[in-house]
Length: 237
Image (cartoon, rainbow, N blue to C red):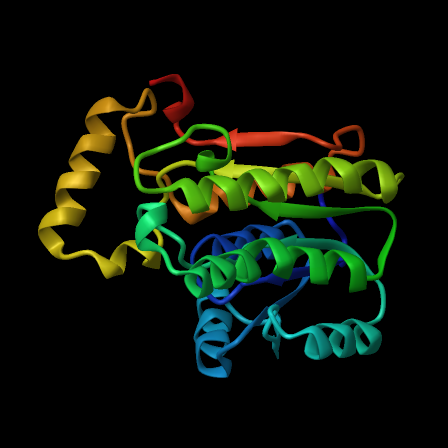
């Protein structure tokens, strides 16, 4: 694995799930990691899980002023990773406009805000976490499909506009994150059993699986403008 030798790595949404897994992998690779999120308590708990030596900052990526101020004060980063987003599942006729706008703001516009404000060194990287719904539709998920596809389109445009800074996306499949806490035990167990029986990888993904892919993209100086599937083969079935 590439050694990042103290490179400054920012993980937006680093207090849980894929963001936390990415922060762990990046720190193990030698990076100087900063995690940001909306909850100081959750950030402190994440820092303990990472094992110390990680900086924390409270930031709401849906707040224009807060994002601008954070990046004005935080200097230049070597690598920035975005892994945030919330809501938007359901039949479109059942989603009111505010719910749809909130879902887009929590992911697409959050990524847009950070991308336009962040100072990233030339030759560094910006990585978005999207989701398989951006390329493979599913029932009751049209809003999520649109949001992830929009993020991937933004990534491709920025890969040209930000060159030689590299811009990529990672598209996870079923990953064991707190997202599943919203479902009861029976539904979680049934879904896990289905995933493990049908995915070519024959297992549920872990946050560190995605983190390893993100860190690979951070270190690979000849990869930009791609969507990397980290999905256990779910696009094949």
